[in-house]
Length: 149
Image (cartoon, rainbow, N blue to C red; front, side):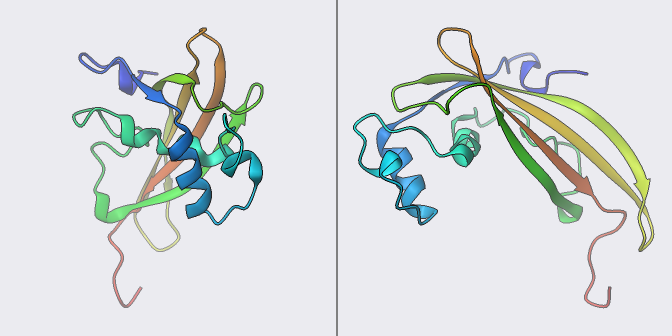
């Protein structure tokens, strides 16, 4: 399958894992874990990697695979993170790239065909090691939601 972030002009991007951003994220998620809040080189919370979207170039295709879908009919179908060691710590620079893994359709129970896209986002550290992958599913419903549905 094509690598969405590897389209011409979009070879992926870098994300700096920053101490202050880890603290902000931990506080925003109401964590009291001292590993995130007090450590001078804190480890990042597992879902912190989702903030990589803020590092994407403004003209990059959406990493969640929703490009070309009708956003009025798009639902977040799920997301998971797989780590291949400890989560990255502050001071780490990650190379982020996304690829479309699967695309398929199903008939919806309320009418219309639903389109599913599963994307995999890879996070590689400055030593070339795969740190984590995120798998996300977006769903385009067969029709836009209505008040009487």
